[in-house]
Length: 602
Ligand SMILES: *[C@@H]1O[C@H](CO)[C@@H](O)[C@H](O)[C@H]1NC(C)=O
Ligand SMILES: *[C@@H]1O[C@H](CO)[C@@H](O)[C@H](O)[C@H]1NC(C)=O
Ligand SMILES: *[C@@H]1O[C@H](CO)[C@@H](O)[C@H](O)[C@H]1NC(C)=O
Ligand SMILES: *[C@@H]1O[C@H](CO)[C@@H](O)[C@H](O)[C@H]1NC(C)=O
Ligand SMILES: *[C@@H]1O[C@H](CO)[C@@H](O)[C@H](O)[C@H]1NC(C)=O
Ligand SMILES: *[C@@H]1O[C@H](CO)[C@@H](O)[C@H](O)[C@H]1NC(C)=O
Ligand SMILES: *[C@@H]1O[C@H](CO)[C@@H](O)[C@H](O)[C@H]1NC(C)=O
Ligand SMILES: *[C@@H]1O[C@H](CO)[C@@H](O)[C@H](O)[C@H]1NC(C)=O
Ligand SMILES: *[C@@H]1O[C@H](CO)[C@@H](O)[C@H](O)[C@H]1NC(C)=O
Ligand SMILES: *[C@@H]1O[C@H](CO)[C@@H](O)[C@H](O)[C@H]1NC(C)=O
Image 1 (cartoon, helix red, strand yellow):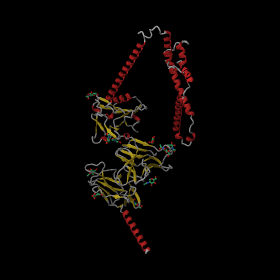
Image 2: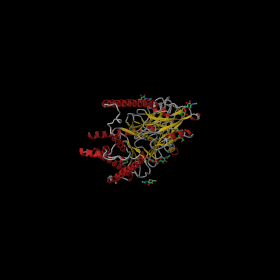
Image 3: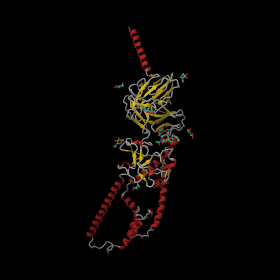
Image 4: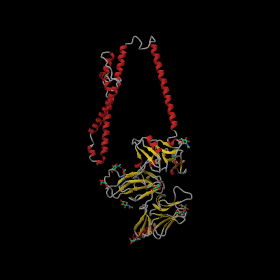
C-alpha cells in the first residue's frame, strides 16, 4: 500500500515537473511571433514573470497616443526599449521574423528599428529572469539586449568600453582608462570621474556593473578587487527590490530602486549632485536655478523669450537678434550667474582679465557673445563665442556673467535672476544708513549737552578749563607730549606705563617724540619683519610637530600631501591652543601692578 502511494506521488511530481517545463518552454519565443501596440496585454515574459517585453504608452503621454516596445520590470518599470525609445502609433508591431531578426514597424509599415540578425541563423528568442532579451542560434547567444543597452543597466548586465547609454543629447560612457564620463551632444564632458586614487594600476579592459545589492563598481583583470564607484543609499537592504542604473533625459545618471510589482521607482544615487551643472539642462540660452528644492529653467531677462512656452527646458531666444541692432548693442549684467564651460571648449576661451574688462572686451569683440568672470580667486574670465549657452544662477555663487542684447535692458520682473530687486534693496539700505547716522548724531549731541550742563553746574565760574588760573600749564604740556609718545605707530617706540607715570609727574624729562614719517617707515619695516618671523615660527613648529610616521609609512606615497596638510593643521591648532591658554592665566595683585607698569601705554 505504502509503496503504491509512493509511486503515485512520484508520478504526480513527474507530471508536475513536465508541466512546468512546458510552461517555461512557452517563454521561448519562436520566429514568426509578434507583439502589437493595439493590445498592451500580450507580452513576452521571463520564466518567473520578473521581466516582460511588450508595448507601453510613451512617457510623457502624447496625443494621439504613442507606444514604445520595452522590457519592463514587474510592475511596469522599463529598463530597455527597442530602437532606444522610438515611438509608434497604435498600429505598430514588434515582429520576430522567420529570418531571425527582430523588427519594430509602425502603422504605415515603416521599419523604425532592426536587430540586424537575419543572417546569424537565429532559431529562438527569450527574455531571461535577469531581464536580458537574447536571440539564439541553437544554444549560442548571437545577440542580446544586455550587449545593446539603451539608457539603463540592470544587475548582471555589463557596460564595457565602447558601449554607450543614451538619452536625448546625453550619453554615458566607460573610457579605456577606467574613467566614467557624461557627455552632451557627444562633445562636452560635464562629468568625468576617475578610479579611486588608491587604485595605482593601469586597467586593461574595465567593466562597469551594478551589483543587485546596489553597489556600482568597476572590475578589471588587473584589479584584485572591484573598484567601487558608488553605493546606492539603500545598498544591501533587504526586500524584493530591483536596483538599476539609468541615464535620465535630464542628463543625470542615477541608481533607482523599485519594489517588485509596485511600478514605482525611488532615486538612490545621482552622479551630478547639482542638476544645474548638467550642461544644457535648460536648453540654449536658458538659465538653471533652484526654487525651494527643484531645479527650474528660465530666461535671463525680458530681452529673451522661451522657445517653447510649454517646456522651459527647450531654452530661450533673443526677442531681437544682435545682428539687427549693431548700433545699440549692450551687455546684460547677470550677478551670481555663470555660463557653464566644460572640456573641450575651455582652452581657447580663457583670459586672465578683471571683471570690467571681462564685460567690456566682450562687448567690443564681434566673436564674443557672452562672458563670465569667475570672481572665485582664479582671476579667470571665459568668453563664449556664438553657439550653445548653458547658464547657471545661484545666490551662493561669486561669478558674474554678461551677455550681448539689443538695448535697452529689460530685467525680469521677479527677483529670481537677481537683477530686479537690486535697486529696491539699495534704497532700503540707504534709508537704514541715514536713520542710523542721524540717531547716532542725536545721541552724541545729547551726551555732550548733558556733560556740558554737568560741568557748568559744578564749576563756580563760567570760565573755560584752559584758561583757568588753577590749571598747571606745565602739566598740560607734559600730558600732550606724553600723548604723542603713546600714539606712536611703532609699538616698540611707546613707553612703558611706569615711565608714563614718571613723565606725567615730571620726575623724568620728556624727549621730543619722532616725526610721523619716521614712524611710518619704521612701522613698515617692522611689520614685514614681524610677518616673516611669524611664518618661520609657524613652519618651524609645523616641521617639528610629531609626524604620524607609523601611520603614514603604511600608506602609499600618494597620500603624503594630505598627511602634511594635516600636520600644518595640527600645528596651527596647537598654536591657537597655547595662545588661548596664555589668556587664561590669572595674576596675583602684586604682580598686577608690575604688569601694568611694564605694559605699553595704549
Ligand atoms: C487587458 O487587461 C486588463 C486587466 O488586466 C483588462 O481590463 C483589459 O480588458 C484587457 N484588455 C484586452 C484588450 O485584453
Ligand atoms: C511611420 O514612420 C515613417 C517614417 O518615420 C513616417 O513617415 C510615418 O508617418 C510613420 N507613420 C505613422 C502612422 O506614424
Ligand atoms: C548556427 O550555429 C551552428 C552551430 O553552432 C553553426 O554551424 C552555424 O553556422 C550557425 N549559423 C550561422 C548563420 O551563423
Ligand atoms: C559581466 O562581467 C562579469 C565579470 O566581469 C562576468 O562574470 C559576467 O559573466 C558578465 N556578464 C555578462 C552578462 O556578460
Ligand atoms: C551637436 O553637434 C553637432 C555637430 O557635432 C552640431 O551640428 C549640432 O548643432 C549640435 N547640437 C546642438 C543642439 O548644438
Ligand atoms: C579621469 O578622471 C579624473 C577625475 O576623476 C580626471 O582628473 C582625469 O583627467 C580623467 N582622465 C581622462 C583621460 O579623462
Ligand atoms: C578608495 O579606496 C579605499 C580603499 O578601497 C577607501 O578607503 C577610500 O575611501 C576610497 N577613496 C575614495 C575617494 O573613494
Ligand atoms: C600607467 O600608464 C602611464 C602611461 O602609459 C605610465 O606613465 C604609468 O607609469 C602607468 N602606471 C602604472 C602603475 O603602471
Ligand atoms: C519649484 O519648481 C517645481 C518644478 O517646476 C514646481 O513643481 C514647484 O511647484 C516649484 N516650487 C515652488 C515653491 O515654487
Ligand atoms: C538703444 O538703447 C537705449 C538704452 O540702452 C534705449 O534707450 C534706446 O531706446 C535704444 N534705441 C533703440 C533704437 O532701440
